[in-house]
Structures are given as C-alpha cells and as structure tokens.
Image 1 (tube, rainbow, N blue to C red):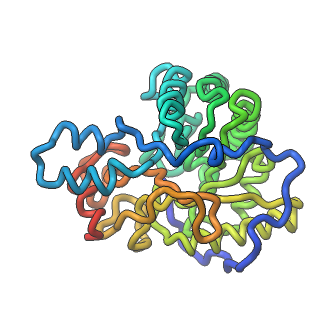
Image 2 (tube, rainbow, N blue to C red):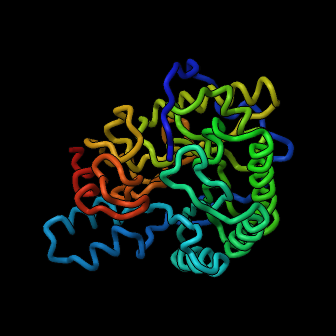
Image 3 (cartoon, rainbow, N blue to C red):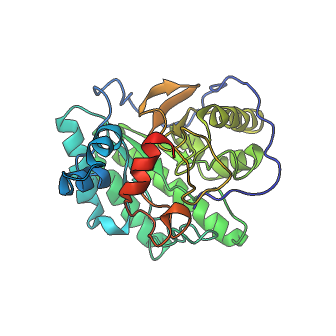
Length: 323
C-alpha cells in the first residue's frame, strides 16, 4: 500500500491551486460551515486501546496526542451492513455538531499491484451496491469522504480493461455520492509525491471522474511533508488546467508526516505525528488525520508480525515523540 517508485518525480511548481472550476464539479454546501469542528471518533482503535489499558504507562500520551485528535474512520468489508455503519457514524457526529471524516476502502481489486492491503468487494457490481449504500447511509448529513486509497497510484500490473473497469467504478461512486449524499465533500485519492509523476496522476484523476468530485487527497498512509504535497498538488493542478480546463482543491494526510519520509512506506521507524486535523494549511483545503497513527501498514518494518490496520501501541507511543 502507498508504494514509492524509483525515478524522478516531476518538478513541482508554485501555482495557484484553484485555476478554474469544472462546470460539472460537485455542488455541495460547505460542510465546514455547517459544523463546529471535526469529529473525534470515541470508538477509534487508539481510544479503544486506552479504555482497555488505563494503567499502561503509555495510555495518557496516546489518549491526549492521538485518540483525542479528530481522525477518519475507515469502512470496508469488516464494517458489516455498510449503510447502517456510515449512518451510525455520521449520525453520532451530527448529534455533536461535528464534521466526520470517512474513508471508503472496499474497491474490487484493491491494492492489486501492492498486496499488503489486497481485498475488497468480490466484483464491480458488488462494489457498486456497496458504495451506493455507503452514500445512502450518510444521506443529507455533512461529511468528508476519502474515496479508495491505492486506487489510482499503480497500474503497472493491470491490463487496460482492468484500468477502465476501475475508472468506471470510481466514476459511478462519485455519481452515487452526488445524488445520495449531497452535503458530503468527496476527495479522490491521488497517491503521494513519491509514487508517480504529477502529470500521470492528473490523467488518472481526470479519467476517474475528478471533475465530479470536490477534490483530491494526498499522502494517505504516508509520510511526505505537507509542503512537498502542496507542491505536488500544484503540479497536478497545472496539468489539469492546461489539458482539461479545471483544477481542484486538495487535502493532505498529516497524521504521520511530522518527521517527513525516509523513503520507506511500510511501517518505517522514526516517524512522527503531524499537524492535527484542521481547516487549511500550506494551500490545502484541509489537513486531515486519515491514517490513524499506530495502525500498522502490514507485516513489515516496525510492525513486523502485524496485519494491516492492527493498532500497535508501542508504535503509536514512539510516533508521538518521533523515535
């Protein structure tokens, strides 16, 4: 998941990030204005660990620095009835007048070229039903949705038919959100600055229906500094503007980028939590904790022996201090 590739990344230019607006852009009311801050999930994996281990010497630091910070909840095959799951989560946030962050992670053929996070729906039609129910569960409530991390970063093992199939799944998903959850801002995942060049990513995004999304998300489950992501976003938007006549807002996952990247993507040592979830920063529309600090990337690095998504308290604790 979140692979790095060798080779030069396209030079990043300092450019206006909203050069034009796509005529078909998702026209949703501002969920930021409709709520009073972001939702901190009381049932997140770090919150659950703290509740179960109150006497652990690491518990107070993990509670204050991670569990209490608003972050995304990921939804996939483990979520049970997906409409009920997204409805319950966004309903709890609405009751608190807070803005929830959701990640849809169940695409058919997910992480096909990486493998650490493979899985997802059993077919494109099953995914279409699942994502439609996901959107219906949100309904008219305000929300932020990150759509399918890993989906556009690596096509190296895929045939053109499989690529087209994936793009069509995302196009349909965006249509579902637009009709069924009109007050949600949906961001297509766009990898990170170390994965593929900005020009290629711009084409992947456009072909997957970006014009019908709020924007794109960067650095999900990765470690690149926010400023580097902002420069990459500028390059993506330049290509979109020049070739397709529009540009888009972007958001950055800052959950684990406090020490930047050391070139590794899978549970590298010495990483640190970054800027807490907030509106704006370095040109981004929002800085969000999308990947929960302390949750494993897979059986690798400092998470050796773990599975992707498993909460590792020692990793979380060290990430608070950056060692």
